[in-house]
Length: 462
Image (cartoon, rainbow, N blue to C red; front, side, top):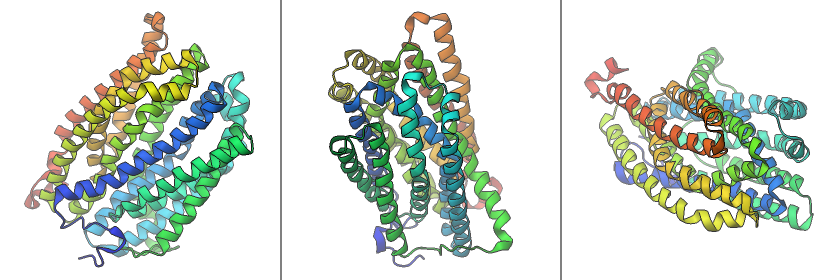
């Protein structure tokens, strides 16, 4: 049994009652989701004070930033399931090897992405068809963002190492630091130093520096269930890298395809003017205030499922899945109602008197905001597959959503019903989210039951 359970607010994933444990596991990461969204929301507030052009510039390239980070993010999150399962099996030396190699991989990737991205920023912006009116502010913002990229990935890495041990509390604390720091640095750069969109980018860099410093101090002054070294057992390096990439790359491809879809949608929406692009970004910020917490319900369940799967405590796994789905559905319904109530005041504030953009925002959120219900349930199902290291599911379903529904849908609406204009994109977003949930439920019913077999059937199931 792991010692010092009460230290660092750590949860006992093996013995605590399942239902209270679900709340204790998910509430910190949900709070972190709210705070992370608030971070982006604050950026949007300050950008909106500068104008819709600046909002559109940031919104246009934000999916690009996430796509660039997805390989490292996917491998980090895949590492959570591997390390959590090993800890559940009490294989702490192997968990140490995986944590060590995971850190090496993430540091290497962050360096490569930053150098290449910064050097080729003009080419990248032309490739994704940034319009002439958006090009200059977007170029400034993007190049500075690349400086903060390694800091973001280091933070993701250490978040993963905490989550794998059931130490969820750190996610909300670091996110709170981010929101506070981002507000302060944005206010100084925009209102005191009058730096415009360049100031928003530098505010992000400063905030990430503070977060990483606090994260490193917190991690290296805490006790852990494994050792984080600079060198693992060399004879196992190939095996470890293969496992990390096998589990992590489908997650990376999932995140990349999702945000590549947003990038393509921005290209389509840009045909209806930068105000439509700005409205798309503002609308996404409004419903992401509760979309992200809904997603994080699943993230909080992953260590709980993975560690108990490693211990073959299948009754606890079944309860976690059942309660998790009920919990996510209830939260999704509540979130959908709240989104519809807050869209008016927040939309009015963020559009800063631009009535055209405000109208686009209301139309978008009125329709797509309700899909938070499907989003919450879907991500809980996705977390179940991730917990069992079947991450190919997430890649498959997101490819279907993007290339099977969203892109064909947008093209079909623009070709056959051009009078709908941006509404064609809104309808496609709604349809794709609902159909994706239906697909996930069917897939779940077909593939997960073998993993929930009794202990006697366990070996045959996996």
